[in-house]
Image 1 (cartoon, rainbow, N blue to C red):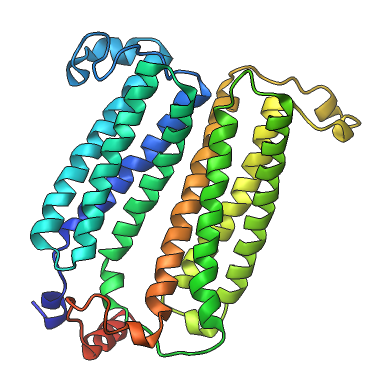
Image 2: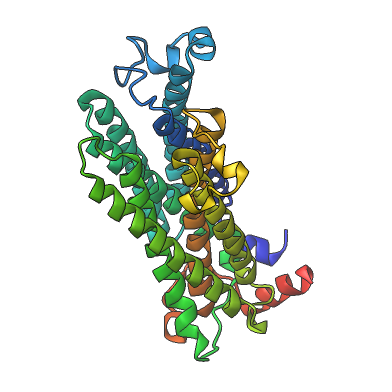
Length: 348
């Protein structure tokens, strides 16, 4: 085993974090379907399922029962699996990781997934729509925290040596992605309020939320494009920043298309499209498979955008942090300059 491998910490926290992310992503998708299909109350009790222990509910009844029961009970099982993986990740991190802040992050992730599970249970027990809004906001926040843990425990993180470049681009590289991350999360919060709108709310409230949602989407598209232009600089070659910027552009373009599609399948084409036959004869489907999946995809891609802004922000801050901070971060990781050069040479 070579020196650079010996200097790296255990890979188990990172592996478990990636497994957790792989479970949380479909969990968000299934949670979106639960909301889209109004299946949140398909199981009236919690933490059990129709009087059974959640893990002992008859599989035949679950798989071959009504779709809303299938999707709601599956959502609960995926959430429980995420909790079990989070427990294993905390154990692996606390026993192998040398950085205190990474250990604290692992514990915070476990607390957050427990809190999210409690919110889901309270939503059923209290039949409260405002709890559903919070539940819809905490899910993406947990996904982002898991992605951040994946980046912080990755081999890439340990192999980076913070640059001494003091160009005028540095502040923009550090702060713009963080600002965009915050704005993207705010956009998801607006979306959660739209999806869980009270039936008694005045139409003006829905109108202003729609206007805010569209306005923030335009701002996100502009900020993403600007960040993509910045990432074209030669200094970003082979450090992962250009790749995450490319993915963000593709995701934002996809999200805009999904947003337009979501509006069409829910409300029909705008009035100025009525002159075209395809718009004039279009009938808004009611709970069709296309409508359910299109709306849910719009929610899921929003979480993916948030995840990749997290990756991009951490990569930029890790790579281009100020020189004065180099000696105070990750001091427990003993990767030397010669190790980094050797790894870079081997990658080439």
